[in-house]
Length: 220
Image 1 (cartoon, helix red, strand yellow):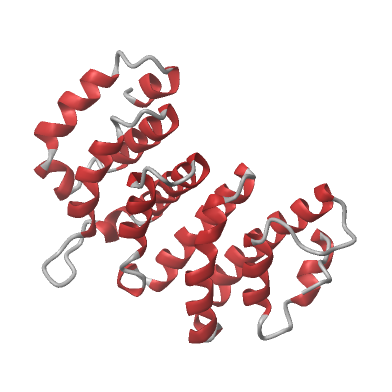
Image 2 (cartoon, helix red, strand yellow):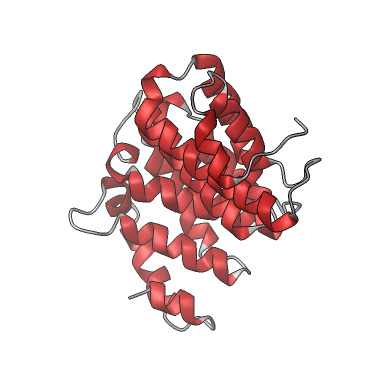
């Protein structure tokens, strides 16, 4: 794939059946052989991620299963990108995949994101990208995550992990983990949050004295 379109040209490619595979490739590849400048290429990547999310939202039922499999297996690479904007857009695409396909369509995504944060060999970019993706998934799928699937609730797995992440050495991880927990404390409080409330409330109180302003703000 030597030719890379600019942001305006991407929309003209929508008629091709494998457009979503290409958009995924473009989003997740930080470098490519292209005549575009670095800024132009990054703009094209951002546009590709936005268009990919929009295509998933509007045309999910017409996307071939093979393409869905490719997108899921590849898009996560964008969470480790050095460009924070690409990491954010990648999280948006992942969230849309979960939202449109349903929690059971991608059961491994939450464990994989948690593992990326827990892994001490993961780059700070990947850890922050994975934490941001978890926040987005929870924000857009809060009710679905607290439902039982084969006698298990995804949120019952996730809440203890989020509590663990509130003690991270990274202030960005701490703040985002607490913000994610807060999603499930809104009325009506999620069942999985109720079950862990005796651990959640003391942790929030402790974090009100955190050295980082963003973390303290997330306690409010």
